[in-house]
Image (cartoon, rainbow, N blue to C red):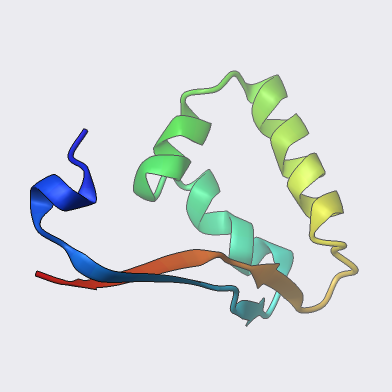
Length: 83
């Protein structure tokens, strides 16, 4: 692990941003994962069918899918420093 002093960084600042994305439907949100897109979708595709169904059901519940648009909150950490 490199510590900030060893790397020569100064004036380190971090911020957390939590945007909310509105997607037209649960399927528009979850479909790419079910098709195996990105690393998360590939991990999902590797699971047994019963577990994939359970994950879909839990995500649908967590997003409060009511048949219309769904809101997904993301979290990004942004860091900056001077060298």
